[in-house]
Image 1 (cartoon, helix red, strand yellow):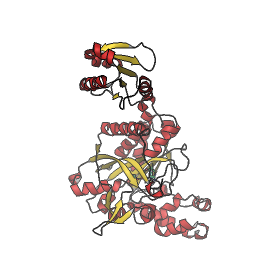
Image 2 (cartoon, protein in one colour; image 1 turned 120 degrees about the vertical axis):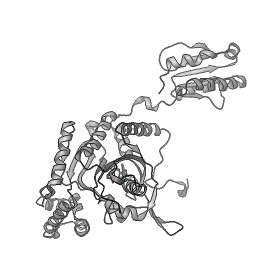
Image 3 (cartoon, helix red, strand yellow; image 1 turned 60 degrees about the horizontal axis):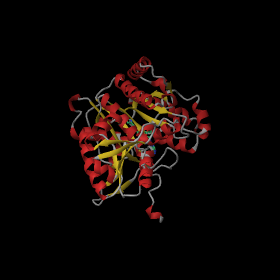
Image 4 (spheres, helix red, strand yellow; image 1 turned 120 degrees about the horizontal axis):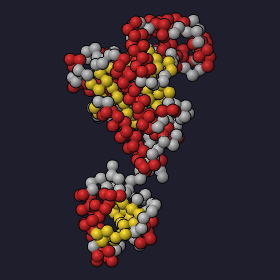
Length: 429
Ligand code: HAM
């Protein structure tokens, strides 16, 4: 195939064989969000570039080098959304739905775009499901978000493979004081820092804590600790969150170096990480962003949320072999018809059955074919039963009913009794 007809690097098709697992995952999360009282929000995939610059932060990797930004025909600078929080903040401001201190609990799903170096678990178009909560400032809601994800890992059968890392970045005041102390310490060891960290020291010093460079890590061992700079408000909040996680029986580790790659966080930050996927092990991440709405021009409005990477979680389900068998079966019954008269009768009969059993997954053979070839297709479809209609059956107004997996003899069922019979043997979702 010529190069121009390939998908863009890092942007993947999700093929028909893969979508049952995606839909299983998505519907599991959607149900859970509903059950915890979150309502879905849908925002555009493209926003003004300014939105992301002002919320995520000018000196973050995302804004500095990963955004898909272009000018539209009006000369406006637009960007494909690299994440979902910024748009939620814009939407609540634009529609005034957090005005007067009104609580909003929302969730979203969709593709996000970042021009990163593609590798396993890291793509340029990837999908997130996220939750955001506005106007609740206590640790109870931070805990609820974490509890919700913990329940999800349980439902998906991956609890043992993920670990919760937790930190508090404090209020902006306490973080400011910590930043000063960190800059002072690191400046005294400037020659031992890697090039990237030297640059970050000037632009976004907290991100130096994130370094993978061994020499810089060695310097950080004796660096001031964020926990020592937390003010009382942040400390009480963090203790409140830990107490709730303990009460819910959710294990966690405190990671004082967890700072996150987006600038809007304050107080709680957390990541769910796995060691089963190689380098891209963070499957879900989030935290509190109490200053963001105000920074974007609104009234002071606390916010907290998370987003999970669907591709990474799908990979984890596959790696751990936690893909439920039944989700790949898409057909309950496959109808084989032989000859034009039988085909016409099959169509009419199927539509009657569908009227009575709206959830039945009934596939009619298309493209005619011999007995052998239709039967092969019935088997390959994964159906539990085949229905067989030829001239003989048509003459008697019956249809052959043949179990394809497991026991049971073929039998003839009267047209009128077919729906009732199917209802007894096919579990309908
Ligand atoms: P984030 O850490 O940038 O946070 O992304 C959240 C999750 O999205 C990551 O933990 C990962 O699972 C997935 N992810 C990120 N980049 C990629 C990629 N290139 N390929 C595949 N998966 C990826 C946020 O986006 C924040 N908006 C989360 C948040 C919501 N904080 C508060 N509310």
